[in-house]
Image (cartoon, rainbow, N blue to C red; front, side):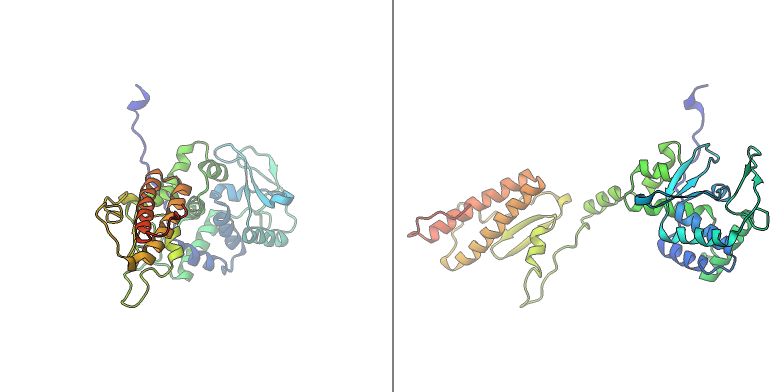
Length: 329
C-alpha cells in the first residue's frame, strides 16, 4: 500500500459567523450573568483558543513583555506545543476581572500527567467545565435574538469563535506564518483553509477581472462637469485616455483600447484654431498620464501617451505658425 492509496479526508472550510452575527453574539456575551461563561467566551473569541486550551490555562498565563504589551502563554495542549498570543485591551480586562475575584485556590492535579497545577479557572476548589461555557453561549444566542432559517435559535459552537478569530485576521491580510503561530497549527495545510476562505489577494484579483475594483465614471447631466473630480480621475488605477471633448477610463482587465486617441494621432486630423485651448488642456493631462503610467510601470501605456503627446504638439505648432517655440515636454 502506498500513501496515494489512502483516501484523503474531506477538506471543509472553517465555519465562521458572519460579521454582524459575530458582533451581536459577543455583545450579548458581555451581558451574561455567569462571570465564568462571560470571561471564557470572550477569551475564546479574543485569542482563538481551543476549549481544552482555555480550561488548562494556568494562573501565571498572562505575561507583560513591556513595549510589546501583554501576551497569553498557552500551555502544552493536544498538539504538544506551547505558544504565546498577544492580548487586546478587552480580553486583558476580562482576564483581570476573573483573577481579581478568583482568590486563593489550591493546586489541582493535571489530567494528563498528574502534576499539581495552579489553574486559572477554579471555583470553590473545583474546575468549571465545558457545559457552563456551552450553556452560556446558548443563553447569549437567545439574548441576541439570533435564529436560523427554521426560526429556532441559531446553533453556534464555542469552536466557531476560534474560526471567527482566525477569519478576521486572514481578512486583514495576516500572513500564513503569523496565523500558524497564533493558532498553534503544526502544518501549513491546517492554516491554508483560512487563507482559502478569506484571501484579500484572491478577492482583489476577482474584482479586477470583474471590472469592479473602482466605480465607473458617471454620466453627467447636461450642464454639469463630465468628471466631478479631475484629480481623482487622473490618480485612479485604470487605463485613462484624454480626448479633446471628454475623458475615458478603461479597467485594467480590459487591456488597452485600440481606438484610444485614434483621431489625434491620425495624419488626416486637422484641428481648427478655436480648438487650440482644448488641445492644450488635453496635452497637459496626457503628460500627467504619461508620468502616472511610468510610476506604475505600465510600459505600453507610456509609449501610447508619448505618441499622443508628439501628435498634439505637432498640431499645436500648426495652429501657431508664427510661434517657433516648442511646447515643453
